[in-house]
Image 1 (cartoon, rainbow, N blue to C red):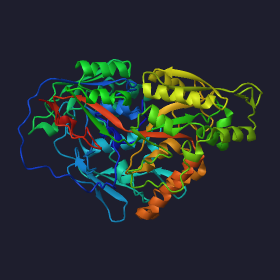
Image 2 (cartoon, helix red, strand yellow; image 1 turned 45 degrees about the vertical axis):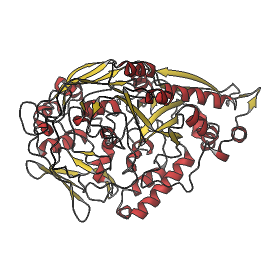
Image 3 (tube, one colour; image 1 turned 90 degrees about the vertical axis):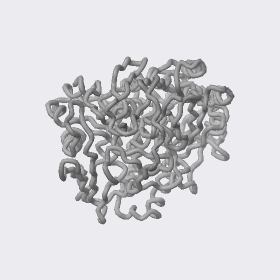
Image 4 (cartoon, helix red, strand yellow; image 1 turned 135 degrees about the horizontal axis):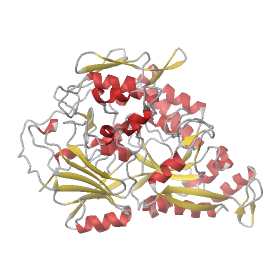
Length: 583
């Protein structure tokens, strides 16, 4: 399972192909549709997307943090925009590009007037304003991304103002400049005010509301409608005949769309080869085999996602992780070259920080490149451990109590790539005398018992952060997980690494990092050179500090049955999935 930060990544993920970019996008740029009218494809068949990743956590999207949950909801509601393969904005629910005032403080969004909730009630600006002010910003609502909509005003953290201008127009009004706020305001959907207002202030009722958990309110807002969700088995949708983008084209063209959870990558590969599923992500070891099959087409795309080895910096993890030199020594013991060649078979780039190379904000100069070249040095790592009080005896590192050090590494079961990374980490660390126990867990177990945190003895609900004194229900030491970066607006990654970050699972708290994430959201950062300087400083700091070991930016290989037409391979493959069809 990959924890996702931004709608950019969810929009690009429909076929497992997440995107990287090479130039800065702009929300004022819009793709102009062709005036030619191609033949309308026939509506037929069932598209089955196979996955062995964890199931979604919820369909009540305001509680979601995982990619699967956002993806499931996204089949039934498009959202405001999409990105094409040139990273241009393609308008969806918006009637025209977002207007930004000259001073950079007022953002005006205008909705199409042909959007309807189930039952025929028009989607209005008031639905969006209510969703933000009364739900997402509310104290009683545990929304993971609140901080994205706050700003520092006279020493206080305040929410930006949201107001309706008329039936289809609403505005965000800031008091301070944020150069990347433009991207934040297209992240999420809205709830129908006439339905959810009866649950306001009642978290239990909102959480359990049937119409919110079965997406029965989504009207004509997406290409598909929810039919059935069998937990850890399948998510079933049917064609939405009222789809607002299908009035002239007849889209979408599949009668049904199913996300099928298969236990292992081997099961997915076998199902694709047999024709039992239509598409799936192909693990690196199987790419050559599938490229040789006549009935399969394989697309390889770069991603904006990275694999990371997190250390538990909280009070129920190994105390040594709180020492930066220890973290550096462990990162120095794990070969990124070996990982990329033996596990990803070359379909990856080494990662040293959270910004991918094709991002306009990537800076390589000064990065601490642990795990490659001179910074892959197990002998030096052992010396550092000894200097920090962890001696080796009989080939084993001893903890501060003189006992052999043993760490636990966890990841979600069924993901063979991540399981293989765990085995590699175990081997690499055993070479310097650290024993590592492997635990492969169902996603739901990992999520609820290991990733969520709360202060012991408190009444607070478990959350991914909950402050420096919070810990997970079950202790852990190392975690292999996937994170994602919006390459156009990397500041969103503050949710993973800042003190107030809603997805700061590992418990990394550094005022200097917090300050840099804040600086990139200031008026001075409107200057692109200054923003690049800030991002360079932030990347260099995190590559040295190592809140976790940044391992690799893997490519995505996606296989399709050859009769699937309409695919546009590229950095945003899947942005037009509603136009795919069977030949």
